[in-house]
Image (cartoon, rainbow, N blue to C red; front, side):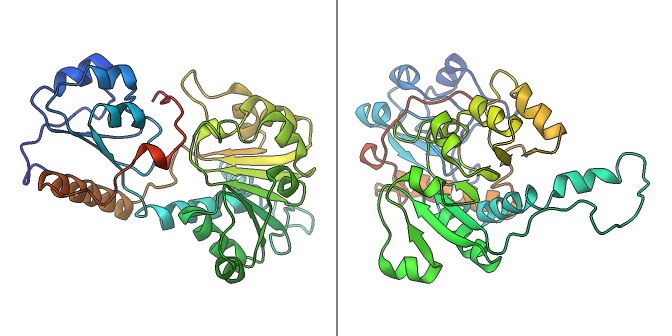
Length: 319
């Protein structure tokens, strides 16, 4: 960016508050943001008139009020596709983690460096082959997860806003469910791959979590707002659900202590938003941001523009 543009940087790598962000934008044409920057309608209304592009460094953009930006004449772009395979790899690792007790097993030798040795009934987990995986949102990442899961012998089920073409279903061996409640009652593992919108906020509500099969597992690598965390914790504590593997979770007020307790009891696996964290992925994200900026400044529509009609917007979450 510094080679191509007159660029200034946030050297401390910490989110600016609204006032500081606005102050830094005077004279700037472009804001390069990330998911930790809360860009709500009030902040956008105070942007200097020079700002014409918000180039998000990331696939998600629920930190930005897209309608407010559009109304202000500001274009918004993101970096889709480049993180698909990395995120799907991580989702598959999380899918394995609870049934095969990976985190629990990894901790055994860390206590004091000793181990009593193998025995026939020690650390028994559950086989993945023959189980049913329910995917909420069969988009790019959901499809990549389905391909991997099928190789592990899982049957693929999905639900979402629309049914996929027959050729896609046949290739993945995927079964479509029109109702999420129906799908939840028929699968052993549920994996979330849908954006955070008005329609998907708490898509796994307390009632829907209770509708999951006894002993089922939840995997969330998408957005924390998709799940009622309190209800999830209660159902795991009660033994209705076997556990959960979460790469995203509510943390603005500190991580839910009930989830932390369950993680220490090896019923929940918590990873700190690592889904897209590969060197290769971050480099491609940066290159995509630069392509969006260069195309826009050259007077052409950027290739990864986010429009209000693409989403059902929910007011941006905090960092």
